[in-house]
Amino acid sequence: MRNSNARLILAMSSIVMLVGCSAKQAEISQGMSDIDRQRDIQKQQVEQHADVLKERISENAESQQKALDATKAELDAQKKAADERKDQIADQADFAKKNIDDQVKTSKKVVDRNAEAAKAALKEAKDRVQ
Image (cartoon, rainbow, N blue to C red; front, side, top):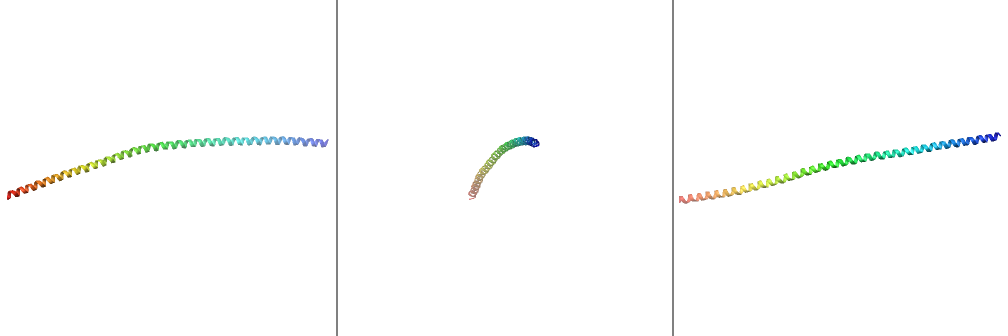
């Protein structure tokens, strides 16, 4: 009887131990599942945060590009105005030079006429003296 009691106790303690191990295994398994779930949640949060940062970067880049395009358009307009003013100055300089050339031509004609008139007066005076 003692032997059978010992066997019974041994069997019961084995069962209790198996049940305890099984419960511990379930607890460990549940812990592993919780860790996996937390890992997935954290990865998803990291991805969402990265997406928000990328969107902000895209918006900032787009805003800067629009500002640069506006500045470029303004600079292009200023360059066009400067080029037009440069052309006007060149045209005015050409006109002034032509005007001076015309005045020189006219002045030379006047000088020639005055010289011819002086020669004619001198010749007339010489003819009167003779």
